[in-house]
Length: 190
Ligand SMILES: [Zn+2]
Ligand SMILES: [Zn+2]
Image (cartoon, rainbow, N blue to C red):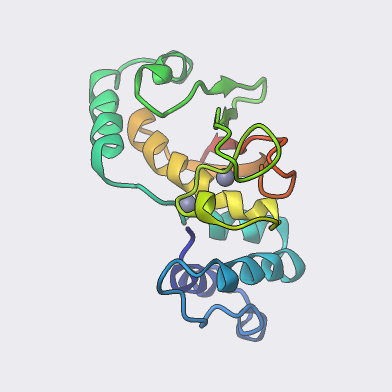
């Protein structure tokens, strides 16, 4: 799940006005995976920040940045470092859990988390973010939350592709569609 503390730090770095940051409830106690303080903060971001600011804050979040995926992505980066980006993207599905990125006409690329139905929503999929599947129904939260999933992929894709990436769009989320739509994001190189 996203870290309120880190989100606050990022907002200061982005020079968002302190009185705006102060309205988002980012000082709430988050220990014990407290979604009841995280969801309102996410919804407040939608009210108080521009889309660009929200994406910039969330792309720096992300769970599971270490471990096997980190190792695998870095190994992929080394192995394929001399290949053009399109070729690397076409090979990304050889790395476990990295999905099948789709290259768009403007050079950006889109990742869709294939997801799975585990009873969280009535729809066919749920968010990949840790802890979501343990939540009691019903709940809904802005797709901005899925920036946490995006931050996860951004971290690993940067290492695998050897480029700097930016989150361009959160295309859809299970969290505000009762599981009908998957987590899907578009990244561009910067
Ligand atoms: Zn997460
Ligand atoms: Zn998600």
